[in-house]
Length: 158
Image (tube, rainbow, N blue to C red; front, side):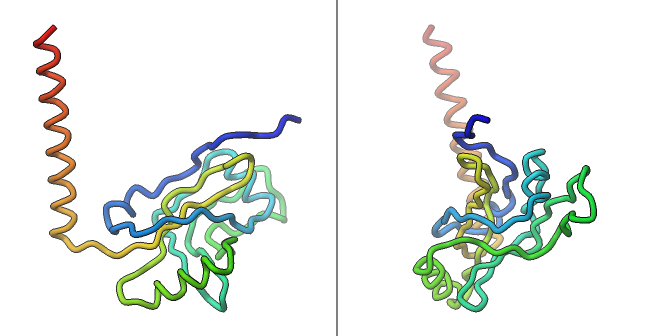
């Protein structure tokens, strides 16, 4: 069987980019069971309610929904169990120090296959205030309007 290469997106947490200001991102692996990987290969997962934390010098992610594998037997996994994240020791220490600061949290951004292995994009983030969210939306709308105006001007020149 040929080895998988490239990236295939499984799930994305779009709400996180709206709710938080992303300071830094990390790519990490996850300790999974066989039925979890099979369920992920079907492209089924949900990161919206998920959060990560450091406990006992280990990184964990909780409340990420990976549904039970449909052809699974008694070996099936529970859908919202806590899972260990695979990070380097120095990265864990750095994240532990940062999350102890007020307002900093660890948020999952995306879950994907990279060369056949499941990877999680984890973000060190700070929660946005309501006015920050409004300003971000306003900036996105302004860039969209300028892009439309430029496109319309180019069409008129032809």
